[in-house]
Length: 169
Image 1: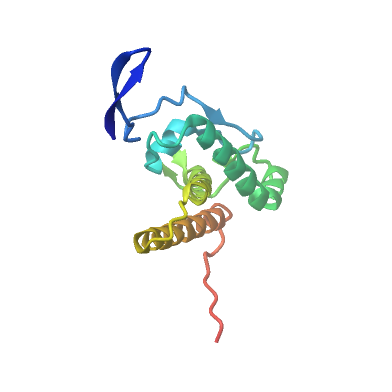
Image 2 (image 1 turned 90 degrees about the horizontal axis):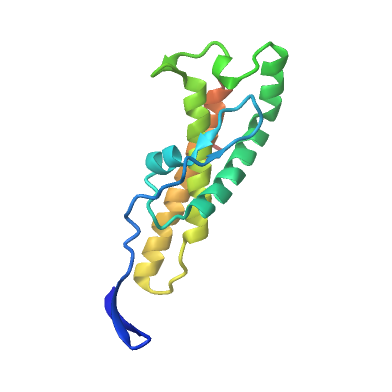
């Protein structure tokens, strides 16, 4: 929305932010224990196509929760790996490498990114009683479910377990 606003008798032009601009996250990272890699917010933002409508503070908050959630899911597995002599996820074998990084690290990041975006999407879902609003909410619900599924699959991939789908007959 464009318009004019008067301040102290001086008319100033205002333009609403589209939210599409790039955000400088100032190299912010979320770190947990030494075993798991840090999460770079700029890389998360880029990978998950998060624009300027998501502030660094909100992204940090949801990423901290995502890291805590994923680490909780991997806790028992991590203890076994450390008892086996692996001090970092990067070192756990067997694991192929892509771009000189362990696939387990890529999948850990994917799990964290997916949970962070699911949490953000849940938080930003607008309540609108119009038919168009209902369609938008339904589309977001599908996206949120897909993000949680992707996180579960990435966790299972890190642990080397089957993704497995169960069906009741």
